[in-house]
Image (tube, rainbow, N blue to C red; front, side, top):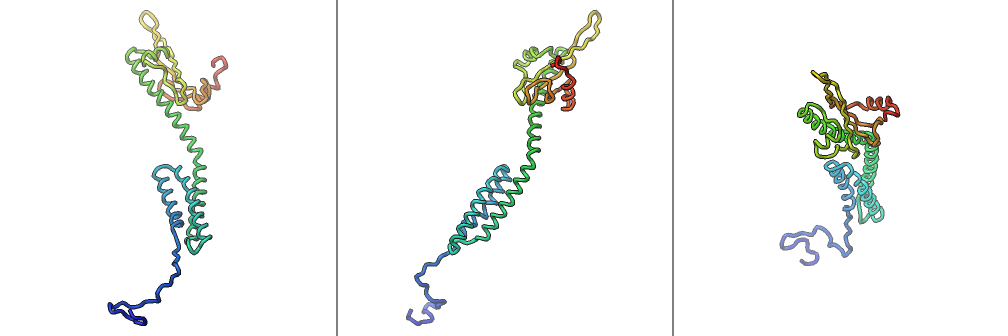
Length: 230
């Protein structure tokens, strides 16, 4: 085109002065967008897998702080300072709230953990009760002692959650016969030493004739015992 021409033969028109040789600097928003997207990723992972992944919020704080630092140090090259600051504040507030919530759940968590321990021990006892009932159906009486149970099952006494052997005791009952008095074993007791591993204490887990004693009943029983009983 000739200098001073307004239009070209092809129909093109000038819309502005030609660009000079000064480089054009484009502000980068990558760091702040990464910081904004990270909380959604951490929250999704925590909801889908486990709440422990919420600790990834530490990475979100670092990303937001990094985006703020870059935007403050070189505002012409990096943008999104306010967005990064808002993300940082929101993450810190949410993290503090989540931490407070999890701390408040610690007693409940410990309680559920104790319930799982108790359930594991009671399950072992119930499994043994099934074998005892089979024995009673076959022989008309309960096993005399633990040695009889070991011969019956072909293995040692089952253990509780704390790997303590569950103790078995049968109680005799005299039944009048025609010529002699017959002694039958009609009731039994299964006892786990509990967390302390000591029999006869308040934390024992006790079953009598298929019924579990309450913690209050076990505690009362342990208090009623004399040293000679132990």
